[in-house]
Image (cartoon, rainbow, N blue to C red; front, side, top):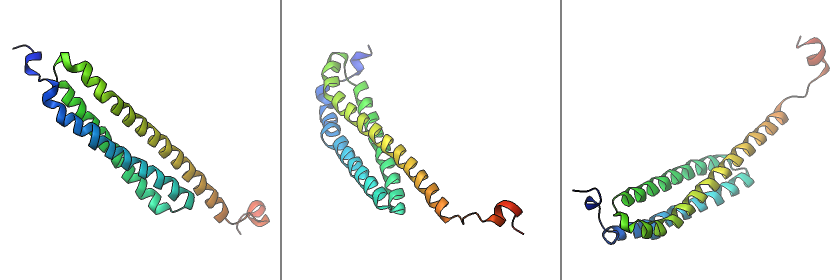
Length: 141
C-alpha cells in the first residue's frame, strides 16, 4: 500500500479543520488580545500583581495557540497530496495570523519586562538614602 493510499481526502477531515479555523484559533487569538489590553492597562496603572498574573495567563494562551496550530499541522499530514493546495489555502491565513499575534505578544512582553526593570530601578534609587559627607569621606563610623 502506498503512502498516499493511507491518507484521507480533505473532505473527511474538513469538519475538524474548520472547527480549528473558525472556532478554536479565533478564540485563542481573542483571549490573547484581551490579555494584551490588560497587560498595557495594569502596566500604566502600576498594578504589579495583576500585571504579573496577566503575563502568566497570556503565556499560557500563547502555548495553547501554538499547540492548536500543531494539531492542525498533524491533521494536514493525514491529507492526500492532491488536496494539499486547497488545505494550505484554508489554513495559511490562520497560521499567519496566529504567528503574528504570538510575535506581537512576545514583543509586548519584552517591552513590559524592560519597563518593569526600569521602574524598579527608578524606585530603588528613590528609596536609597542620600549620600552624606560622612558616608563618602570617612565611612560609617
